[in-house]
Image (cartoon, rainbow, N blue to C red; front, side):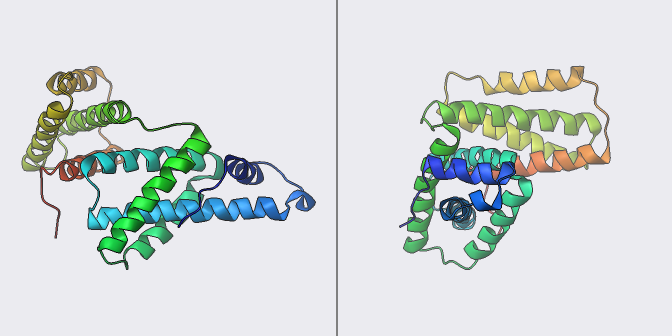
Amino acid sequence: MMCPIRFAAIAAALALATHSVPANAQDGATIEAVEQLSSDYTAIAGGWWLDERCRLLKFEQKIEFEWLVGELTEAIAGELGAGWTGSRQQSAQQIAADIPCDAAAADLIGDSVTLARVVTDQLTGLVYTQGATDREYLLGRFSSLAQGRAVADRCRFKTDAWRAEYRNLVDRIGVALGQRYADVDFRSLATEAQLGIDAAAIECTPDLDKRIDAFFAAARSLALQLGLIAPVP
């Protein structure tokens, strides 16, 4: 059973990484806190990558886990650097690749979600509330995807067929989310995103192309989570 790190241990770990600490002040407890933070984050990331491959979580559970991992990663990277989180993500992905998608994997993923809740709360003070956090998160995510689609159209990115697929994905995602959040007009959100991009000064550069590719990948990911498209074999 994974043991969550205490808030004091997290604070000590961040202090060690972000401040000049004399060698004689780096006692065993502080060093242990750094190691525990690394172990717990790697375990959480491992559960994330395992579910990315096995897809055992339900949509509501996946969205919570995604939000938790995102908030936790942002908080840690902000203090320790993106390289710190990135290296542990890479190690976790490699480990998860060798784990069978069975009942034991489901338990590992469940433990990772539980640990992510505890560590995110302790480190950031943020708590996921079903029906509120997911609503805000998914509205923001949909708006970003709609903006990416509008930029792709404006810059005539890739082919007409590719852009049509992107538009179709965003439309279908809007319909699916509208069934979950009936008080939200997702078509209007998409229109607002389009109007915002139309009014903005945008330079269609190769760097922007990379961002559009990322938006499209995110749209496919959300569509897959919603059961709108099948996973690539």
